Image 1: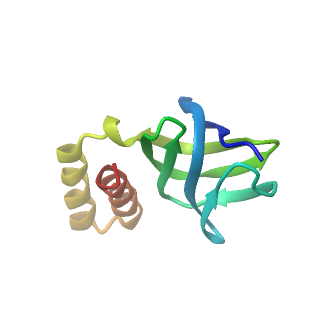
Image 2: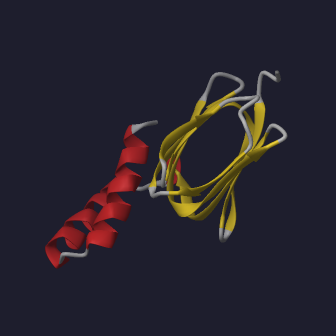
Length: 124
């Protein structure tokens, strides 16, 4: 069994992150899933939520992901997201304002997106 897997996280508009990892945790429609090297092949639908990647060098990458697919085969994990942004790209003050505006307007979709972004920042 290999000690690491290749991960590619891609959003509709760009490659968000690519590299070697020892563990990836993501939320799917079936629940949270952890993928390590040697995992059984899988194909799933991503739910909005933070994705945590434990990199081979011992670091952690966290991204806010909003929908998409997760696929694993031949020690390659693909996260194909509708929208994804790394936690260090997120402007917390801006997102907090978006969250307050969404709550005031009763926009539950915007509220959920803002919440996911704030959870991704908190998980760094």
